[in-house]
Amino acid sequence: MAVLSAEGVTFDFEMPVVVVGAGACGLVAALAAHDAGQEVMVLERDENPTGSTSLSAGLIPAPCTRLQKEAGIEDSPELFAQDLVAKTHDHTPHDMALVAAQTAGPMIDWLMDTHKVEFELVTGFTYPGHSRLRMHGPKSRTGADLQQSLLSAVSNADIDIVTHASVEDLYVDATGRVTGVRFRRPDGALEMLGCKALVLASCGFAGDVALVQKYIPEIADAECCGHLSNTGDAVKWGQAIGAALADMGSYQGHGSVAHPHALPLTWAVITKGGILLNVEGQRFSNEMRGYSEHAAEVAAQPDHIAWDIYDARGDEAGMGFYDYREIRKLGAIKTANSLEELASVTGLSLAAIREEFEAIETCARTGKPDRFGRSFPPDQMLSAPYYAVKVNGALFHTQGGLVIDAEARVLRENGTVLPNLMAGGGAARGVSGDSNYGYLSGNGLLTATAFGRLAGITAARIASES
Image (tube, rainbow, N blue to C red; front, side, top):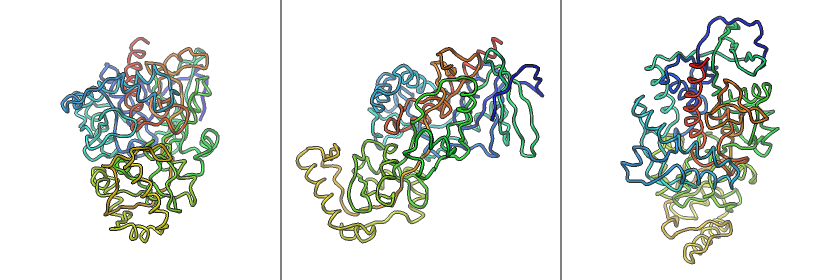
């Protein structure tokens, strides 16, 4: 990975807009640049474009969409931005949170109406931290289906995606303008591609062990369930150019990854009254704070393991998710008709389980929060049959990266813009603050798609002016 001088360099061919990465961010950026009238080429390292998008649940939070309005849900970008900022404890820039919130709704409608990408509104439950039902995704609740829909849209728009194209170097002139890239093909051949504008959509650095150890050591020893090709290319290029980085300690983890199956157990089971018990049969946190911060919390428990405990309501909510159905097929979900049987199938202490259930019953009866600050309304009391899944904490993707402005233009350390470099998704600083607790459900695909669209629009404008 290098940034090389553009002086005297000639390219094999040129395109007005080049996008590095064919996940949700890169594909949305390509569609946006195309719709703005520019030719686009997408370069993808892998043989089959998948990335972090395909590993996700495919859900994008967005306010004021057509689907929200049809469901009678009143929402606003301002309310969504408030939710984003509140989740980070005021540690993300208000202006960029509002930009993401303002962009997301029209982006969903545009993908649906112009590019025939199918979404539906998730109405079965509200994700922790969201004030409204605003999560949009494919019917299957899989990122793989979202990825395929975006790939189909790009294909229908006759946008070229070059796979097996590993971008190694950027060519930059004395003003900081990127004039092109060099990428390697599977046979080792190097090709030179010039551009007028470049979009970095190569995600973050969860697959680079050294960078994870440097920036987020708390999760460095946990399992990485993210895409291992996310090796921080954008961060490395950006640093070499003099771009600013921010929130490098921010990441999306998951505190309920079925063990050892490595499939995420939807947090919907928690929203229906579910709890987490460690191997000593004890609760250790307020589970409703969210799944991301629980990655490190579960990893810190004895044996780095916990058990998700829930009932039929959680099971019903989970069945709407492909990964949950797969977890069920794999036999990872244990069932029990009593606390005694629950202790038997999990190997946990019956006395400890009873103590935790009695504490929850007291909270429900008195209306007072528990020792972790979680409230248990009477309708969230768990009842037999009980369901149990052994889980571990894992890292999925990072949320820190290149600092961008409201047009997704990458900024230098002194705050000025680089002439023709845009970024979005995991390549850019997100809206999740500077740690794990700031990740609001859907933030990864929010910044991938919202900032991806902005990056594509800006890239097209810059290319047209060049």
